[in-house]
Each structure stands twice: as C-alpha cells, then as structure tokens.
Amino acid sequence: MKPKLIHQTFTRKAFSRLAPIAVSSLIFATAQAQTAIQWGLTLTNINNPIPTTVVTNGDGSISITAGGGDTYADPGQPYSFAYAYQQVTGDFDIRVQVKNVVLSDPLATQPESAKGALMVRTTLDPVLSADFQINASPLAPAGRDGEIETIGRMRPDLTTDDLPGRMQKYGGDSTIAGYATYPDCWLRIQRSGEKLMSYFATTNTTDFPVGAASNPGSTNGWQLMCVVHAGTNFPKTVYVGLSTVAHNGDINDPVPKVTSTYDNYGPTPTPASTPSAGGIAVAASNAPGAFPNKKVLAANFDAALPADGLGYPGDIVQSAQGAPSQIIWNSGGFGSVSRDVIASISGQTPGGFSFGRYQAGAFDFLISPLDPVAAQQNLGPYSNPLRKRIATGDITTPPTQAYAPSPNYGFVFSTVHTDQSLA
Image 1 (cartoon, rainbow, N blue to C red):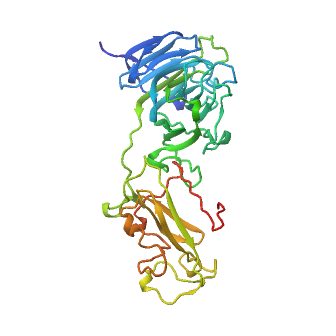
Image 2: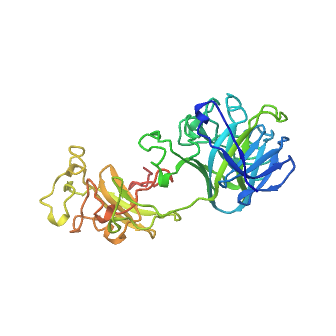
C-alpha cells in the first residue's frame, strides 16, 4: 500500500523546516496495553489513561504521540507517561536520536516541560520505581525552548530531583535554551557497574564548560552531563527505553499532547578514536596506543627535588645538558631550571602511562602511549642520559604519543606526600 502522507504546517519559523512525513504503520496503545513496536521495544502507558499513538515513518523513525502528567514526582506520588521499553541486564550503553518534540498546539507556551526522553527504570510501577532519565524539550514558544535535562528518582522512596552535572542550570543537570538542535539531537545513557551516566550530542557549540564547546569539544562528539552512583537501588536487570510525556496538570485531559519523533535507537557505536593535532589527524607513527575505554588503569609515580637543589632546564636531553644551576622556584617559565623536578613512574597496570611535559606544579599525565617503554625513557634521575623534561610538548616524542585523560569520562588520581597525607 502506498504510504499515506501527513502534512504538518506551522506558522512559526521554528517549525517551518518540518517536512511531510511518510507513514508506513499506525499503532494505538491503551492504558493497559503491552504493544510491540520498533527496535524490539514494548509500548505501555504508565498511569496514563490517554491512548498513545505510534506512527512508523517512511524513514524508519517513529513518532509517539502521548498525553500524561509528569516524570517528576514527590515521594509516594505516581509518574504518568508513555513508555517504550526493553529489559537490559548488566552494563549497557544506549542512545537515541530525538528528531523533534512538538506540542499538539505548536504555538502554545504550555505545557513547557513536555519531554521526549531516554529513561532507565527499575520497575514499571508508577510509584515504586527508581529511575534515571535524560530529556529533550519542545522549542519556543514552549517555555523550556529546547533545553536538555537529566533528572532522576535514585531511590523509590525519594523525590525525583535534579542531579549534579556539568551544564548551566539547576546544579548542572540542565542546559540553557537552544541545545536541542532538532533533528540533530542525540540522547545517551550508559551504565558501568554502579554508575549511570547521561550524555547528549547536538550541533550547539556553546562554549560551556568554558574552554570545551559542547559539541564536538567532548570525546567522540558526546557531552557528558551527569554521573550518579546507582548502587543497589538499581538491580542488575532494569528497563531502558523511550519516555514521552505531555506534562499535563490533568492526566485525564485528552487534548494537550506531545509528539516526539525518535530514530536510531540502540547500542552506542564506539568507533576507534582518531587522534589529531591542530585539527589534523596525526600519522600512524605518531598516534597513541589503543584507547583504554574498557579498563581501569593505575600508576604509582614519584616526584622530588634534588637533594642539593641543583637542576637543569627543559627540552634538552640529559646527555647534552651543561652544568647544573640553582633551582629558584617560580623565577622562570616551564622550560627554565626554576621548574625542574625529578619524576618517575615506579609501578603501573598494563596499558602504559607517560609524562611528556612535566615541571614542578604541573604534570601532563597521559595514558596509553604508542610505545610504553620509550614513553618513559625521559623520566628518572639525572643519571639517566635519556632524561628529557619536555616543556612544550611535541607529538613526535614518545611521551606525548598518548591520550590526555578526558574530563568528560572522568579521571582522578591523588598524590601522597612523604608524610602519607593526601594532596
């Protein structure tokens, strides 16, 4: 049968780019239904008496039209929304493209907190479930105007709440307006052990956090938003899927609805990282080793000043150094003798570590060098003829043919003074 065309025409500029949608199938779900839909998901209405419509579009995307009250509630109060879910056991990394979130009246300012979302739940009960979700909101004139947020009910007996994050609003779990750049708006949730992490990827390049534009400034184009400790409140097997809610004050009101269009739901691809310098891919001979995205790495390193207080400038191999001179702290730049320090890695897990650029007060700690043995030949005492304290860094030197730990995935190491106190 020839696909039926549904034409949507809006007067606002924000909606003028919507093209006709070719429809290949149409599904209605009642409040009690458990209906199979795209991507192996099962659609149900959780405390949502308004039937939900699912349209499979000609491009393979699906449009879910739903009512519902909210996915934010006080203790003992129920959620109300449409949920298309699968059950997942153990660690996972799932993403979805949200191509649009549109109110049934696209010129309305309310309900401003309608959502197209990716959600993890511990049960399908509207009250007795912990959850973690990342949501995209409608564009203006709706009040949230394309904000992206992460919220969660981390224990069933708690209020749904904002979570500590890296963005601009509500303690970091929400962006400002304009981040949901439909149709290029991607949401992602990753579970790793007892951690849950939310990410987004859009074409918004606002420089936040400062110095790391939202996209593509993060690793592989994903911006980490929130990391939470799920603990035992989230069992090994959980529900993961698409949450759609109109955010109506009266859940029985059949008129206000939201249509969220989703595509490319499934496991997050993990392509090999392409190292670059100045935006240009480096030659294979200068590239780092394998990216350690599925490892826990650790290293012990020692840093000290020479007993006699005499040191050497940077960027000169030890065998070519002249006479040592007095180290006078902060009397010169990184390459001067005033910043000299003796450093070495005394123990490490497989995978390799290196210090390319190091000096008193600053260590460029790198992981997975191309050649772990050669990467550490620049370290150690002055008796090492290959010692070279690099002050400026250069991708052609073995210590810097490695990855800088990503702030978006997180990296923590502590230093211990000789009196065993943590620094």
